[in-house]
Image (cartoon, rainbow, N blue to C red; front, side, top):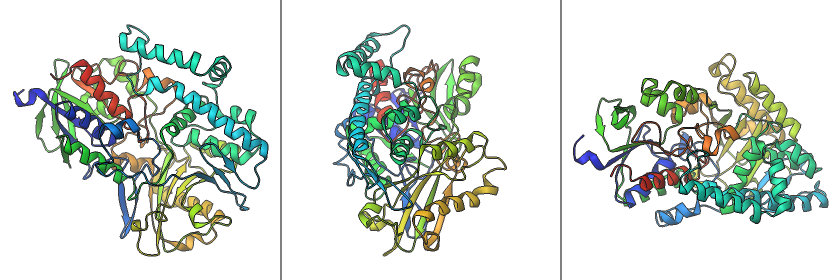
Length: 521
Protein backbone atom coordinates (compact mmCIF):
# COMPACT_ATOMS: atom_id res chain seq x y z
CA UNK A 1 0.00 0.00 0.00
CA UNK A 2 1.36 3.41 -0.94
CA UNK A 3 1.68 6.19 1.63
CA UNK A 4 -1.07 8.12 -0.19
CA UNK A 5 -3.40 5.15 0.20
CA UNK A 6 -2.59 4.72 3.90
CA UNK A 7 -5.27 7.29 4.80
CA UNK A 8 -7.59 6.72 1.86
CA UNK A 9 -11.19 5.64 2.45
CA UNK A 10 -13.11 3.95 -0.34
CA UNK A 11 -16.89 3.68 -0.20
CA UNK A 12 -18.50 1.11 -2.49
CA UNK A 13 -21.79 2.56 -3.69
CA UNK A 14 -23.04 6.12 -3.91
CA UNK A 15 -26.52 5.67 -2.47
CA UNK A 16 -27.76 8.18 0.08
CA UNK A 17 -26.19 6.32 3.00
CA UNK A 18 -22.83 6.15 1.23
CA UNK A 19 -22.99 9.90 0.59
CA UNK A 20 -23.85 10.61 4.23
CA UNK A 21 -21.06 8.38 5.55
CA UNK A 22 -18.54 9.89 3.14
CA UNK A 23 -19.39 13.45 4.10
CA UNK A 24 -19.06 12.85 7.84
CA UNK A 25 -15.69 11.16 7.34
CA UNK A 26 -14.45 13.92 5.03
CA UNK A 27 -15.50 16.59 7.51
CA UNK A 28 -13.43 14.69 10.10
CA UNK A 29 -10.36 14.98 7.88
CA UNK A 30 -10.43 11.66 6.01
CA UNK A 31 -9.66 11.43 2.28
CA UNK A 32 -12.76 9.74 0.87
CA UNK A 33 -13.59 8.40 -2.57
CA UNK A 34 -17.03 7.04 -3.55
CA UNK A 35 -17.21 4.46 -6.33
CA UNK A 36 -20.69 4.24 -7.86
CA UNK A 37 -21.52 1.63 -10.51
CA UNK A 38 -24.40 3.59 -12.02
CA UNK A 39 -24.10 6.83 -13.99
CA UNK A 40 -25.51 8.85 -11.12
CA UNK A 41 -25.45 8.76 -7.34
CA UNK A 42 -28.46 8.36 -5.07
CA UNK A 43 -29.38 4.71 -5.61
CA UNK A 44 -33.08 4.26 -4.87
CA UNK A 45 -33.35 7.96 -3.95
CA UNK A 46 -33.04 9.17 -7.53
CA UNK A 47 -35.10 10.77 -10.29
CA UNK A 48 -35.39 8.91 -13.58
CA UNK A 49 -36.79 9.58 -17.04
CA UNK A 50 -38.89 6.62 -18.21
CA UNK A 51 -40.32 8.24 -21.36
CA UNK A 52 -39.35 11.36 -23.30
CA UNK A 53 -40.36 14.39 -21.24
CA UNK A 54 -41.60 12.35 -18.25
CA UNK A 55 -39.61 12.07 -15.01
CA UNK A 56 -40.40 10.37 -11.74
CA UNK A 57 -38.68 9.19 -8.56
CA UNK A 58 -36.95 5.89 -9.31
CA UNK A 59 -37.73 3.73 -6.25
CA UNK A 60 -38.48 5.71 -3.10
CA UNK A 61 -41.06 8.31 -4.10
CA UNK A 62 -42.07 9.85 -0.76
CA UNK A 63 -39.76 11.65 1.66
CA UNK A 64 -40.62 11.12 5.32
CA UNK A 65 -37.54 9.86 7.00
CA UNK A 66 -34.38 11.88 6.35
CA UNK A 67 -32.82 12.54 9.75
CA UNK A 68 -33.02 16.21 10.84
CA UNK A 69 -29.68 15.81 12.62
CA UNK A 70 -28.03 14.78 9.38
CA UNK A 71 -29.68 17.67 7.53
CA UNK A 72 -28.28 20.10 10.11
CA UNK A 73 -24.83 18.52 10.44
CA UNK A 74 -24.25 18.38 6.69
CA UNK A 75 -25.96 21.73 5.95
CA UNK A 76 -28.20 20.11 3.37
CA UNK A 77 -30.53 23.09 3.03
CA UNK A 78 -27.52 25.18 2.00
CA UNK A 79 -26.75 22.42 -0.51
CA UNK A 80 -30.23 22.81 -2.03
CA UNK A 81 -32.41 20.37 -0.11
CA UNK A 82 -36.13 21.07 -0.45
CA UNK A 83 -38.58 18.79 1.32
CA UNK A 84 -41.74 19.98 -0.38
CA UNK A 85 -45.12 20.59 1.23
CA UNK A 86 -46.40 18.05 3.75
CA UNK A 87 -48.96 15.59 2.43
CA UNK A 88 -51.58 13.37 4.05
CA UNK A 89 -52.53 9.80 3.24
CA UNK A 90 -55.89 9.26 1.55
CA UNK A 91 -57.40 5.78 1.53
CA UNK A 92 -59.55 5.54 -1.59
CA UNK A 93 -63.09 4.20 -1.59
CA UNK A 94 -64.89 3.12 -4.76
CA UNK A 95 -68.06 4.91 -3.64
CA UNK A 96 -66.20 8.16 -2.95
CA UNK A 97 -66.21 7.74 0.86
CA UNK A 98 -62.47 8.33 1.10
CA UNK A 99 -60.61 8.56 4.39
CA UNK A 100 -57.91 11.14 5.06
CA UNK A 101 -55.22 10.17 7.57
CA UNK A 102 -53.10 12.95 8.98
CA UNK A 103 -50.43 12.82 11.66
CA UNK A 104 -52.97 12.86 14.51
CA UNK A 105 -56.38 13.18 12.89
CA UNK A 106 -58.46 11.02 10.57
CA UNK A 107 -61.53 12.20 8.71
CA UNK A 108 -64.08 10.91 6.23
CA UNK A 109 -67.83 10.65 5.85
CA UNK A 110 -67.91 6.98 6.86
CA UNK A 111 -65.73 7.39 9.95
CA UNK A 112 -67.42 7.35 13.34
CA UNK A 113 -66.56 9.82 16.07
CA UNK A 114 -65.39 6.90 18.17
CA UNK A 115 -62.83 5.88 15.53
CA UNK A 116 -61.71 9.50 15.08
CA UNK A 117 -60.95 9.79 18.78
CA UNK A 118 -59.37 6.34 18.84
CA UNK A 119 -57.10 7.25 15.89
CA UNK A 120 -55.71 10.30 17.68
CA UNK A 121 -55.03 8.31 20.85
CA UNK A 122 -53.58 5.38 18.90
CA UNK A 123 -51.15 7.53 16.92
CA UNK A 124 -49.97 9.38 20.00
CA UNK A 125 -49.51 6.14 21.95
CA UNK A 126 -47.65 4.32 19.20
CA UNK A 127 -45.52 7.35 18.40
CA UNK A 128 -44.46 7.27 22.05
CA UNK A 129 -43.47 3.63 21.57
CA UNK A 130 -41.41 4.68 18.54
CA UNK A 131 -39.73 7.42 20.59
CA UNK A 132 -38.78 4.79 23.14
CA UNK A 133 -36.67 3.09 20.47
CA UNK A 134 -34.81 6.30 19.60
CA UNK A 135 -31.73 5.50 21.77
CA UNK A 136 -31.20 2.46 19.54
CA UNK A 137 -31.42 4.37 16.28
CA UNK A 138 -28.67 6.99 16.17
CA UNK A 139 -26.11 4.69 17.80
CA UNK A 140 -24.51 1.38 17.00
CA UNK A 141 -26.82 -1.40 18.23
CA UNK A 142 -25.64 -2.69 21.62
CA UNK A 143 -24.13 -6.15 21.86
CA UNK A 144 -25.71 -8.47 24.38
CA UNK A 145 -22.33 -10.07 25.13
CA UNK A 146 -18.97 -8.40 25.89
CA UNK A 147 -20.64 -5.00 26.00
CA UNK A 148 -18.51 -1.87 26.03
CA UNK A 149 -19.35 1.40 27.75
CA UNK A 150 -21.30 2.72 24.75
CA UNK A 151 -23.41 -0.44 24.61
CA UNK A 152 -24.24 -0.15 28.30
CA UNK A 153 -25.12 3.53 27.92
CA UNK A 154 -27.46 2.80 24.99
CA UNK A 155 -29.22 0.03 26.91
CA UNK A 156 -29.47 2.27 29.94
CA UNK A 157 -31.14 5.01 27.89
CA UNK A 158 -33.52 2.47 26.40
CA UNK A 159 -34.44 1.13 29.83
CA UNK A 160 -35.03 4.66 31.13
CA UNK A 161 -37.28 5.46 28.17
CA UNK A 162 -39.25 2.27 28.71
CA UNK A 163 -39.74 2.63 32.43
CA UNK A 164 -40.03 6.37 32.95
CA UNK A 165 -40.69 7.72 29.47
CA UNK A 166 -43.71 5.53 28.88
CA UNK A 167 -44.94 4.94 32.40
CA UNK A 168 -46.09 1.63 33.85
CA UNK A 169 -49.30 1.16 31.85
CA UNK A 170 -47.82 2.10 28.47
CA UNK A 171 -44.69 0.08 29.12
CA UNK A 172 -46.74 -3.04 29.78
CA UNK A 173 -48.81 -2.44 26.66
CA UNK A 174 -45.69 -1.87 24.57
CA UNK A 175 -44.18 -5.13 25.79
CA UNK A 176 -47.48 -6.91 25.05
CA UNK A 177 -47.89 -5.74 21.48
CA UNK A 178 -44.26 -5.24 20.39
CA UNK A 179 -43.77 -8.69 18.90
CA UNK A 180 -47.26 -9.51 17.63
CA UNK A 181 -49.14 -8.75 14.42
CA UNK A 182 -50.77 -5.48 13.46
CA UNK A 183 -54.02 -7.26 12.49
CA UNK A 184 -54.93 -8.19 16.06
CA UNK A 185 -53.87 -4.84 17.48
CA UNK A 186 -55.97 -2.82 15.03
CA UNK A 187 -59.04 -5.02 15.57
CA UNK A 188 -58.80 -4.23 19.29
CA UNK A 189 -58.84 -0.47 18.66
CA UNK A 190 -60.93 0.38 15.57
CA UNK A 191 -64.23 -0.54 13.91
CA UNK A 192 -63.78 0.99 10.44
CA UNK A 193 -62.34 -1.64 8.08
CA UNK A 194 -60.81 0.87 5.67
CA UNK A 195 -59.07 2.78 8.46
CA UNK A 196 -57.56 -0.44 9.79
CA UNK A 197 -56.32 -1.38 6.32
CA UNK A 198 -54.70 2.02 5.74
CA UNK A 199 -52.73 1.70 8.98
CA UNK A 200 -51.85 -1.94 8.30
CA UNK A 201 -50.55 -1.00 4.85
CA UNK A 202 -47.77 1.00 6.50
CA UNK A 203 -46.71 -2.13 8.36
CA UNK A 204 -46.45 -4.39 5.30
CA UNK A 205 -45.38 -2.27 2.31
CA UNK A 206 -41.85 -3.28 1.35
CA UNK A 207 -41.89 -6.53 3.32
CA UNK A 208 -42.81 -10.18 2.83
CA UNK A 209 -45.62 -9.83 5.33
CA UNK A 210 -49.37 -9.65 5.59
CA UNK A 211 -51.23 -7.95 8.46
CA UNK A 212 -51.42 -11.26 10.36
CA UNK A 213 -47.64 -11.83 10.20
CA UNK A 214 -45.75 -11.57 13.53
CA UNK A 215 -43.39 -8.56 13.76
CA UNK A 216 -45.73 -6.26 11.80
CA UNK A 217 -46.13 -4.07 14.88
CA UNK A 218 -42.35 -3.56 14.80
CA UNK A 219 -42.35 -2.69 11.09
CA UNK A 220 -45.21 -0.26 11.73
CA UNK A 221 -43.21 1.39 14.52
CA UNK A 222 -40.25 1.74 12.14
CA UNK A 223 -42.52 3.56 9.72
CA UNK A 224 -44.14 5.62 12.47
CA UNK A 225 -40.78 6.62 13.95
CA UNK A 226 -40.17 8.76 10.90
CA UNK A 227 -43.16 10.94 11.83
CA UNK A 228 -41.30 12.06 14.94
CA UNK A 229 -38.99 14.13 12.76
CA UNK A 230 -41.40 15.49 10.17
CA UNK A 231 -44.33 14.79 7.88
CA UNK A 232 -44.18 12.95 4.58
CA UNK A 233 -43.73 15.03 1.43
CA UNK A 234 -43.01 14.91 -2.30
CA UNK A 235 -39.70 16.74 -2.93
CA UNK A 236 -39.69 19.09 -5.93
CA UNK A 237 -37.79 17.43 -8.76
CA UNK A 238 -38.33 13.99 -7.27
CA UNK A 239 -36.12 12.09 -4.85
CA UNK A 240 -33.11 12.83 -7.05
CA UNK A 241 -33.13 16.29 -5.53
CA UNK A 242 -32.21 14.69 -2.18
CA UNK A 243 -29.31 12.83 -3.82
CA UNK A 244 -28.17 16.05 -5.51
CA UNK A 245 -28.09 17.90 -2.18
CA UNK A 246 -26.17 15.06 -0.52
CA UNK A 247 -23.74 14.92 -3.44
CA UNK A 248 -23.13 18.66 -3.30
CA UNK A 249 -22.52 18.50 0.46
CA UNK A 250 -20.13 15.59 -0.01
CA UNK A 251 -18.11 17.37 -2.70
CA UNK A 252 -17.99 20.54 -0.59
CA UNK A 253 -16.48 18.45 2.22
CA UNK A 254 -13.80 17.15 -0.15
CA UNK A 255 -15.26 13.79 -1.18
CA UNK A 256 -14.29 12.49 -4.62
CA UNK A 257 -17.18 10.81 -6.47
CA UNK A 258 -16.65 8.49 -9.42
CA UNK A 259 -19.68 7.21 -11.32
CA UNK A 260 -19.61 4.35 -13.80
CA UNK A 261 -17.04 2.69 -11.54
CA UNK A 262 -18.34 -0.78 -10.65
CA UNK A 263 -16.37 -2.67 -8.03
CA UNK A 264 -15.61 -6.28 -8.94
CA UNK A 265 -14.03 -7.34 -5.66
CA UNK A 266 -12.79 -6.10 -2.34
CA UNK A 267 -9.12 -6.93 -1.96
CA UNK A 268 -8.24 -8.94 1.15
CA UNK A 269 -4.84 -9.92 2.51
CA UNK A 270 -4.37 -11.87 5.73
CA UNK A 271 -7.94 -11.08 6.79
CA UNK A 272 -7.67 -7.32 6.15
CA UNK A 273 -9.23 -5.22 3.39
CA UNK A 274 -6.68 -3.09 1.58
CA UNK A 275 -8.55 -1.80 -1.46
CA UNK A 276 -10.79 -2.73 -4.36
CA UNK A 277 -10.57 -3.87 -7.95
CA UNK A 278 -12.96 -2.45 -10.54
CA UNK A 279 -14.53 -4.38 -13.39
CA UNK A 280 -12.25 -2.38 -15.67
CA UNK A 281 -9.28 -4.06 -13.98
CA UNK A 282 -8.17 -0.91 -12.17
CA UNK A 283 -6.95 -1.45 -8.61
CA UNK A 284 -7.39 1.15 -5.88
CA UNK A 285 -5.66 0.83 -2.50
CA UNK A 286 -7.17 2.15 0.72
CA UNK A 287 -6.76 2.05 4.47
CA UNK A 288 -10.39 1.08 4.92
CA UNK A 289 -13.22 0.00 2.63
CA UNK A 290 -16.85 0.78 3.43
CA UNK A 291 -19.66 -0.98 1.61
CA UNK A 292 -22.97 0.70 0.93
CA UNK A 293 -24.06 -2.45 -0.91
CA UNK A 294 -26.31 -5.06 0.68
CA UNK A 295 -24.79 -7.78 2.85
CA UNK A 296 -25.01 -10.55 0.27
CA UNK A 297 -23.25 -8.56 -2.43
CA UNK A 298 -20.66 -7.31 0.06
CA UNK A 299 -19.70 -10.64 1.60
CA UNK A 300 -20.62 -13.31 -0.92
CA UNK A 301 -19.67 -11.48 -4.13
CA UNK A 302 -17.18 -8.71 -3.38
CA UNK A 303 -15.34 -10.41 -0.51
CA UNK A 304 -16.06 -14.04 -1.39
CA UNK A 305 -17.00 -16.94 0.86
CA UNK A 306 -13.42 -18.25 0.86
CA UNK A 307 -12.35 -15.25 2.95
CA UNK A 308 -15.09 -15.85 5.53
CA UNK A 309 -15.85 -18.27 8.32
CA UNK A 310 -18.19 -20.92 6.90
CA UNK A 311 -20.87 -20.32 9.54
CA UNK A 312 -20.76 -16.55 8.95
CA UNK A 313 -21.08 -17.03 5.18
CA UNK A 314 -24.02 -19.40 5.69
CA UNK A 315 -25.85 -16.90 7.93
CA UNK A 316 -25.38 -14.18 5.34
CA UNK A 317 -26.62 -16.52 2.61
CA UNK A 318 -29.81 -17.35 4.52
CA UNK A 319 -30.84 -13.78 5.38
CA UNK A 320 -34.24 -13.03 3.88
CA UNK A 321 -33.77 -10.43 1.17
CA UNK A 322 -36.18 -11.13 -1.68
CA UNK A 323 -38.24 -8.14 -2.68
CA UNK A 324 -42.04 -8.07 -2.87
CA UNK A 325 -42.75 -4.64 -4.36
CA UNK A 326 -42.98 -3.66 -8.02
CA UNK A 327 -42.88 -0.06 -9.16
CA UNK A 328 -45.09 1.12 -12.04
CA UNK A 329 -44.34 4.50 -13.63
CA UNK A 330 -47.14 5.91 -15.78
CA UNK A 331 -47.15 8.87 -18.18
CA UNK A 332 -50.60 10.44 -18.61
CA UNK A 333 -51.99 12.90 -21.16
CA UNK A 334 -54.34 14.39 -18.56
CA UNK A 335 -55.09 14.29 -14.88
CA UNK A 336 -57.05 11.23 -13.65
CA UNK A 337 -60.45 11.91 -12.11
CA UNK A 338 -61.39 10.22 -8.85
CA UNK A 339 -64.91 10.85 -7.58
CA UNK A 340 -64.84 12.84 -4.36
CA UNK A 341 -61.23 14.04 -4.70
CA UNK A 342 -60.12 17.55 -5.58
CA UNK A 343 -56.92 18.14 -7.56
CA UNK A 344 -55.18 19.10 -4.32
CA UNK A 345 -56.26 15.83 -2.70
CA UNK A 346 -55.18 13.86 -5.76
CA UNK A 347 -51.67 15.18 -5.08
CA UNK A 348 -51.50 13.47 -1.69
CA UNK A 349 -50.34 9.92 -0.92
CA UNK A 350 -53.14 7.63 -2.14
CA UNK A 351 -53.75 4.08 -0.95
CA UNK A 352 -55.87 1.33 -2.43
CA UNK A 353 -56.39 -0.99 0.52
CA UNK A 354 -60.11 -1.59 1.18
CA UNK A 355 -59.72 -3.78 4.28
CA UNK A 356 -57.19 -5.99 6.07
CA UNK A 357 -58.67 -9.13 4.52
CA UNK A 358 -57.84 -7.65 1.10
CA UNK A 359 -54.23 -7.09 2.23
CA UNK A 360 -53.91 -10.60 3.64
CA UNK A 361 -55.27 -12.16 0.45
CA UNK A 362 -52.88 -10.02 -1.60
CA UNK A 363 -49.99 -11.36 0.48
CA UNK A 364 -51.17 -14.96 0.19
CA UNK A 365 -50.28 -14.99 -3.52
CA UNK A 366 -46.67 -14.03 -2.74
CA UNK A 367 -46.27 -17.07 -0.49
CA UNK A 368 -46.66 -19.30 -3.54
CA UNK A 369 -44.60 -17.36 -6.06
CA UNK A 370 -47.57 -15.53 -7.59
CA UNK A 371 -48.29 -11.83 -7.97
CA UNK A 372 -51.38 -10.42 -6.27
CA UNK A 373 -54.57 -10.53 -8.33
CA UNK A 374 -55.81 -7.53 -6.32
CA UNK A 375 -52.64 -5.72 -5.19
CA UNK A 376 -52.16 -3.20 -2.44
CA UNK A 377 -51.25 0.08 -4.17
CA UNK A 378 -49.48 3.21 -2.93
CA UNK A 379 -49.91 6.01 -5.48
CA UNK A 380 -48.50 9.49 -5.96
CA UNK A 381 -49.05 12.03 -8.74
CA UNK A 382 -45.99 14.26 -8.14
CA UNK A 383 -46.57 16.37 -11.27
CA UNK A 384 -49.50 18.11 -9.55
CA UNK A 385 -47.10 19.87 -7.18
CA UNK A 386 -44.20 19.94 -9.67
CA UNK A 387 -45.38 20.38 -13.29
CA UNK A 388 -41.77 20.26 -14.56
CA UNK A 389 -41.88 16.45 -14.25
CA UNK A 390 -44.12 16.16 -17.34
CA UNK A 391 -44.94 18.11 -20.54
CA UNK A 392 -47.52 20.91 -20.28
CA UNK A 393 -50.94 19.55 -19.37
CA UNK A 394 -49.56 16.03 -18.86
CA UNK A 395 -48.81 14.17 -15.65
CA UNK A 396 -46.81 11.32 -14.17
CA UNK A 397 -48.05 8.75 -11.69
CA UNK A 398 -45.85 6.58 -9.49
CA UNK A 399 -47.32 3.34 -8.11
CA UNK A 400 -45.79 0.91 -5.61
CA UNK A 401 -47.59 -2.42 -6.01
CA UNK A 402 -47.64 -5.20 -3.42
CA UNK A 403 -47.24 -8.09 -3.61
CA UNK A 404 -44.90 -8.92 -6.46
CA UNK A 405 -42.44 -11.64 -5.43
CA UNK A 406 -38.90 -11.76 -6.76
CA UNK A 407 -39.17 -15.48 -7.57
CA UNK A 408 -42.31 -15.52 -9.69
CA UNK A 409 -43.62 -18.76 -11.14
CA UNK A 410 -42.88 -18.86 -14.89
CA UNK A 411 -40.67 -15.77 -14.50
CA UNK A 412 -41.33 -12.05 -14.83
CA UNK A 413 -40.62 -11.77 -18.54
CA UNK A 414 -43.72 -13.81 -19.33
CA UNK A 415 -45.96 -12.02 -16.82
CA UNK A 416 -44.66 -8.44 -16.76
CA UNK A 417 -47.41 -7.02 -18.98
CA UNK A 418 -50.19 -8.98 -17.29
CA UNK A 419 -49.23 -7.63 -13.86
CA UNK A 420 -49.04 -4.08 -15.24
CA UNK A 421 -52.52 -4.59 -16.66
CA UNK A 422 -53.75 -5.82 -13.25
CA UNK A 423 -52.42 -2.68 -11.54
CA UNK A 424 -54.00 -0.41 -14.13
CA UNK A 425 -57.32 -2.24 -13.85
CA UNK A 426 -57.35 -1.75 -10.07
CA UNK A 427 -56.65 2.00 -10.45
CA UNK A 428 -59.37 2.29 -13.10
CA UNK A 429 -62.00 1.07 -10.63
CA UNK A 430 -61.38 4.29 -8.70
CA UNK A 431 -60.48 6.54 -11.67
CA UNK A 432 -62.77 5.66 -14.62
CA UNK A 433 -61.07 6.10 -17.98
CA UNK A 434 -57.59 5.90 -16.46
CA UNK A 435 -56.31 3.36 -18.99
CA UNK A 436 -57.20 5.62 -21.94
CA UNK A 437 -55.05 8.43 -20.50
CA UNK A 438 -51.85 6.41 -20.50
CA UNK A 439 -49.14 7.59 -22.90
CA UNK A 440 -46.33 5.34 -21.65
CA UNK A 441 -45.63 3.00 -18.79
CA UNK A 442 -42.68 1.24 -17.18
CA UNK A 443 -42.81 -1.64 -14.70
CA UNK A 444 -39.86 -2.34 -12.42
CA UNK A 445 -40.19 -5.81 -10.93
CA UNK A 446 -37.93 -6.91 -8.06
CA UNK A 447 -35.76 -8.60 -10.72
CA UNK A 448 -35.44 -5.25 -12.55
CA UNK A 449 -34.68 -3.46 -9.29
CA UNK A 450 -31.93 -5.98 -8.58
CA UNK A 451 -30.40 -5.44 -12.02
CA UNK A 452 -30.75 -1.67 -12.25
CA UNK A 453 -29.99 -0.71 -8.65
CA UNK A 454 -27.57 -3.53 -7.69
CA UNK A 455 -29.73 -4.76 -4.79
CA UNK A 456 -29.86 -8.48 -4.10
CA UNK A 457 -33.40 -9.76 -4.59
CA UNK A 458 -34.62 -6.26 -5.43
CA UNK A 459 -35.45 -5.73 -1.75
CA UNK A 460 -35.80 -2.01 -1.04
CA UNK A 461 -34.60 -2.37 2.55
CA UNK A 462 -31.67 -4.70 1.73
CA UNK A 463 -33.42 -7.39 3.76
CA UNK A 464 -36.53 -7.95 5.84
CA UNK A 465 -36.80 -5.76 8.94
CA UNK A 466 -38.26 -8.40 11.26
CA UNK A 467 -37.13 -8.83 14.87
CA UNK A 468 -34.56 -11.47 13.93
CA UNK A 469 -33.06 -9.15 11.28
CA UNK A 470 -33.11 -5.90 13.27
CA UNK A 471 -31.01 -4.06 15.83
CA UNK A 472 -28.06 -6.20 17.04
CA UNK A 473 -29.05 -8.89 14.54
CA UNK A 474 -28.82 -6.70 11.41
CA UNK A 475 -27.66 -7.95 9.01
CA UNK A 476 -26.57 -10.86 11.23
CA UNK A 477 -24.90 -11.44 14.57
CA UNK A 478 -21.18 -10.76 14.08
CA UNK A 479 -21.60 -7.83 11.69
CA UNK A 480 -24.14 -5.65 13.47
CA UNK A 481 -21.97 -2.76 14.64
CA UNK A 482 -20.87 -1.63 11.14
CA UNK A 483 -17.45 -3.30 11.47
CA UNK A 484 -17.14 -6.83 10.08
CA UNK A 485 -15.03 -9.97 10.55
CA UNK A 486 -12.75 -8.56 7.83
CA UNK A 487 -10.45 -5.96 9.40
CA UNK A 488 -10.76 -2.60 7.67
CA UNK A 489 -14.12 -3.46 6.08
CA UNK A 490 -17.30 -1.72 7.25
CA UNK A 491 -20.99 -1.58 6.30
CA UNK A 492 -22.89 1.71 5.92
CA UNK A 493 -26.02 0.83 3.93
CA UNK A 494 -29.56 -0.30 4.61
CA UNK A 495 -28.32 -3.83 5.34
CA UNK A 496 -26.92 -2.35 8.56
CA UNK A 497 -28.83 -1.01 11.56
CA UNK A 498 -31.42 0.54 11.62
CA UNK A 499 -32.30 -0.62 8.11
CA UNK A 500 -34.09 0.79 5.08
CA UNK A 501 -35.81 4.04 4.27
CA UNK A 502 -34.23 7.28 3.12
CA UNK A 503 -33.01 8.13 6.62
CA UNK A 504 -29.25 8.43 6.18
CA UNK A 505 -28.91 6.94 9.67
CA UNK A 506 -26.91 3.83 8.72
CA UNK A 507 -24.41 6.09 6.98
CA UNK A 508 -24.27 8.44 9.96
CA UNK A 509 -23.83 5.63 12.47
CA UNK A 510 -21.18 3.87 10.40
CA UNK A 511 -19.12 7.07 10.17
CA UNK A 512 -19.36 7.63 13.92
CA UNK A 513 -18.33 4.02 14.58
CA UNK A 514 -15.32 4.29 12.26
CA UNK A 515 -14.20 7.57 13.83
CA UNK A 516 -14.66 6.22 17.36
CA UNK A 517 -12.53 3.19 16.49
CA UNK A 518 -9.86 5.37 14.90
CA UNK A 519 -9.96 3.08 11.88
CA UNK A 520 -7.61 3.95 9.06
CA UNK A 521 -5.45 6.33 11.09
